Image 1 (spheres, rainbow, N blue to C red):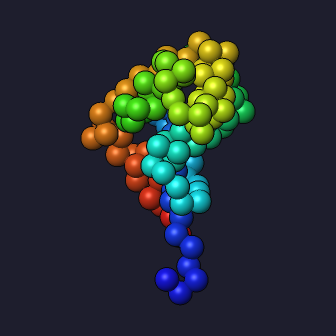
Image 2: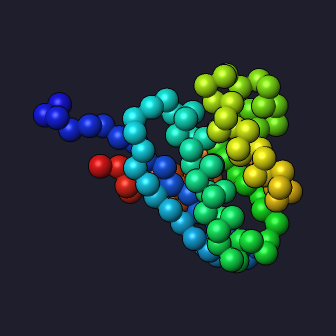
Length: 121
């Protein structure tokens, strides 16, 4: 592998009620299980939204294309111990903002998927 460390990428975005992008992000992450990347992207998106003045004034609908992660958010006791802390953070932040979490089809999540791929390297 020539000393090159493989990494993954996460990416997401926030839109307003008109569908206009408020902010987007793409970051490299250490290689790990895909479900961890899904959890990290949700946590990062919530952190960024909490610090964005436009988002701070709005009610949030958080969409995710990972069935397992959405299931864990609705039933945190069902997630494996190694993910409990990050799921608890997501749930706590979501509850503090009265977020609506919902599952979306991966086919309609192409913008976030493309963002995740931009910062792999």
